[in-house]
Length: 395
Ligand SMILES: Nc1ncnc2c1ncn2[C@@H]1O[C@H](COP(=O)(O)OP(=O)(O)OP(=O)(O)O)[C@@H](O)[C@H]1O
Ligand SMILES: O=P(O)(O)OC[C@H]1O[C@H](OP(=O)(O)OP(=O)(O)O)[C@H](O)[C@@H]1O
Ligand SMILES: [Mg+2]
Image 1 (cartoon, helix red, strand yellow):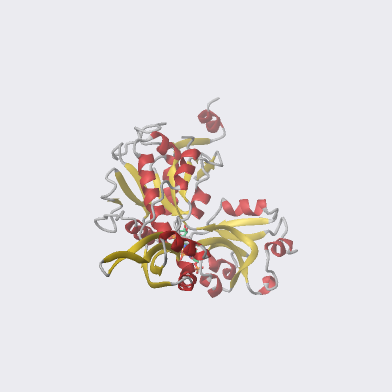
Image 2 (image 1 turned 45 degrees about the horizontal axis):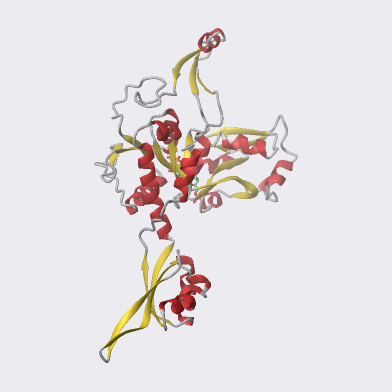
């Protein structure tokens, strides 16, 4: 018996299969899309807190997005002529990566983890009930690949929060929350969340039985005071929203840590022309910029008898090793008609966090005239993430 007739017999008629791919690609049914088959489609957040930071990061990587006006949802990046940017809501970027309507995207890890799980979704219409039902047939999808998991913005965590007052006053951990005698089969702990996959999974993984979830799209922090929920599961960054609503996080209640990530469709990278090459270029530019952000270039002069002797002195200091050891060059002077090098210029990269310690160490070994400049890019021979990506793709 076919899936269709089986569902029809129980009164459910499949009206739409969401999974589809652009006609040229790893095709499973045709689409009327007008998008060129050779274009690589990159989804970026259309609004919200991730959107401007994403554009800023790409600009810093010399990948400025040219958008004619903010209400136009398609844009170009002149440096990547085969790439088309589509502005979408973060959830939809993940959904469209899974359905084959986007090849690449930048979203928060929270969204990838929550919405990247669905393999096949059938939307069913029931004859008996005037309702659309969503049935997720498969959990655990490996078609989404996280290419860069740490783009260093959009930092937040998905956490359980409970009221600071009333029966929760002395509850400070997930264990204590789970042990509260109030929660029974008939009267479970009510949790409001937009994360309806990760929430129940986290509770199940932690052996917490009597829980009931409700969902809302925003301002979840109001739910406990409104009497709609006992706890919430939502994103926290500064913690201000929780504090302003008299809520608190609890020990063991963090479901995941999130930041912006570059994600790509495995099928697209393997099957669509140009996607892997574009992913490589974006990854290289992002890594080169992000690595450089944490470093300064330090130039100093140092008296010495030879380049080797100066290098030895520099390398004796723990904070002065640089990325690949110091560059030491002679500074030539003409004295009494003779050219000689009494001084050497050294160039090293130091982590921003260790800058002052590095200066102290440089001075201690005779460094003077110290110049510090920001770094724009650090390109390695090959990025470790590229190797990892190829191995995930079996290439
Ligand atoms: N407080 C926060 N601080 C830092 N990053 C956050 C914060 N809240 C959310 N994010 C990150 O930004 C992403 C987008 O959040 P944003 O609030 O813009 O959209 P949304 O909540 O999904 O949609 P909506 O417009 O319905 O609020 C989240 O998926 C998360 O990765
Ligand atoms: O810890 P904080 O720095 O205070 O940030 C946390 C808040 O940020 C997000 O909401 P957002 O501002 O996106 O509003 P929303 O509820 O409409 O999504 C999140 O849902 C929290 O409510
Ligand atoms: Mg939000």
